Picture 1 (cartoon, one colour):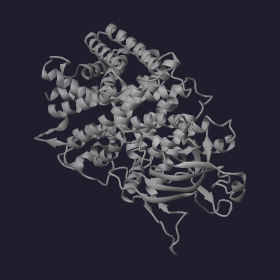
Picture 2 (cartoon, rainbow, N blue to C red; picture 1 turned 180 degrees about the vertical axis):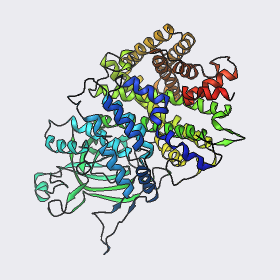
Picture 3 (cartoon, helix red, strand yellow; picture 1 turned 180 degrees about the horizontal axis):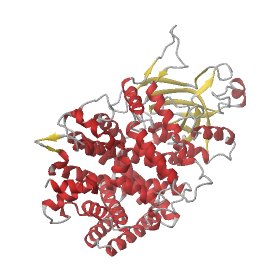
Picture 4 (cartoon, one colour; picture 1 turned 135 degrees about the horizontal axis):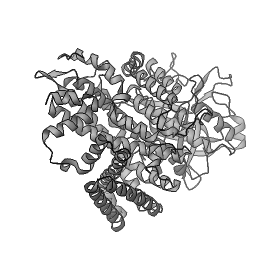
Length: 620
């Protein structure tokens, strides 16, 4: 490839970005760690095809069009009446990307049974998340309603035997469908003006209708099913799937105002016209939010007045029910974080191979490559953490990781109870820390690209500024960092605390044993000390004091768990590059006293893999 000093030279690097799944060393190791090895041919073909699709010209054009033509409201009809039928207008690009999300199974994959032709077992959550990792930066954030749809499908699947089983089964069929003409998306409506992330502040109320009231208003939803026996009234302050077909929401019920969960279709047929015309089901879109990022995603304030729906589970169990969705959306949040970060690093790698400054390419500039290498090491840690969470989530849903290297080396505990305990304990930490690291990492990528990184480029492949804006929401969605810290403290100081800490202790002890057996003695010492300090704090400090130290606790647990993951990964094949990543993460700047040329060699290998190492040596 001929180097160029102009920005046009970047377009010569596009094939390098398109081969992200081949060039991203960390992603390749994640695939080999959590999926069957060797990878079945059908899965390999699908990932290769998809890695090119996500950066194809049609997809990029859809993303640019969705960003350019943002959603808007038509609140009134031509004659000034309230527009209840089609008040929200979304772009062609947004709708096309949603169709891609559906056809590619980025909801359905996690719910589809293994095919009879499969000769190995695999974790469906992991495979879906690898595709999501490739897809998210090109998707204009259709993955957000996709993640909520995924969670809604899992929640409804647990209530098919109850009195509303027929209605829930039909909704489930549509939520997981790969046919855009059939498929539904779902909203997750919890945030209110008073409550925010604290769902106990919910002001929306639900009341079960009397038989007479049901008789007077026996309407049906858009597909002809009854609207439901409950009436909901309230206000939802932040809904990120305003164009969805249904919603899962929380509302107060009964005299004690306990929190219950509800399913509600978003549209109802007008005057029983067999679906020819429909209107919003007791919902008025008050206004769309003007946000820093996620511009193509319609986010709105919703007034709910007379919305009809169905109770999910038992009254007063809403928080417990909604946790099913939160586990999935928080895991999805972590994957989105590493996805945006991974794309920004891929762009930097490609750009460095063609951009010439002071007479040499950036890839031959030691200080530039060292900066990238430091970010790649942190990215590797976050990738291992995010995919541990989705693997554990898959186990909790019945997926198998038995044929994966992660199971063979006990990254996934053999005791399912321990897997569930780790999932509960580590999910809030992973959600919080991957988001914060991705925001910092994508910002650094903007700087690494110079002026191009700061531009709102029409071509989405160059628009790292847009990626940064979208990434910033990930530390807020599904709970801020403080909310995640409080959730962690609630676990360790609560009824589940002893079981969760015992499971983590056994997991860490195994990792430390592996570390010492594979010449990671110094690293094992650091991790052992971190674990002892963390346990001491948990056992000696009150929940209030731990909450005061909340962010520090998240960081310590992240360094500890990611260090164990990197060591376990490196030890499975004694890969020297994986060993270097583990050392750099755990020991930080004290990793060694090697010469700068040796360090620079490692920097290059971390960023570009072994393929460019020979070229790197030639320029030192």
